[in-house]
Structures are given as C-alpha cells and as structure tokens.
Length: 100
Image (tube, rainbow, N blue to C red; front, side, top):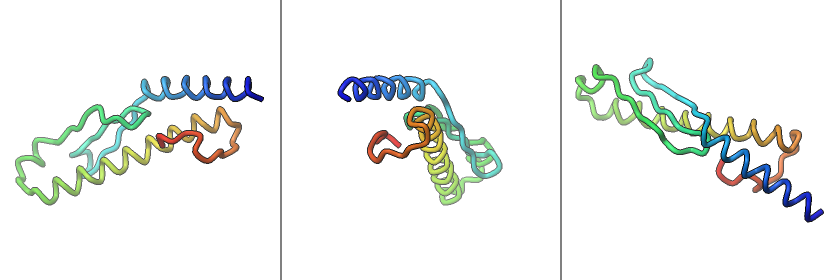
C-alpha cells in the first residue's frame, strides 16, 4: 500500500508539471480583456484592448478584468479536475489536489 501511495504521489507531481505547461484563456467584453493562465493558476498575461483604455471608464475596466480573472480561474480548476480524473479513474478523493 505504501508503494501505491508513492506511485500516486509521483503521478500527481507529473500532472502538476504538465499543468504548469498548459494554458487557458478567458475573455470578457467581447474580447476587450483577455487573461491567460497556466494550469497551476499562475496568471501569465493580461491584455486590455486599447479602445477600452481610451474609454477611461475605470468601473467598466475593473468589472471586465474581475470577470476575466474569475473565468480563467474556473477554467484552470476544470482543467486540473480533468487531469486528476484521468489519474483516479473518476474517483473523487478530497484534498488530493489542493491547488484547484
């Protein structure tokens, strides 16, 4: 059983490395704000359309950035869950993958 736990831990480490190399993107405002993150929830880039900046509407900009950030985090969680499902065969193990 100890050996199985070690193998599982090793596979989880491999999945985390793979997730670090995958990216997801979310956008709001018809693509005016785009956020890209990797599979371990690190924000890699934020793009704000020049037109939105020129509008000089701070509240709209904040709302769109917040929405894009929330959406990218949701997509990262979904990606991580998909990868873990491959490992566990669909069995949900609480606390197995705390980064999601």
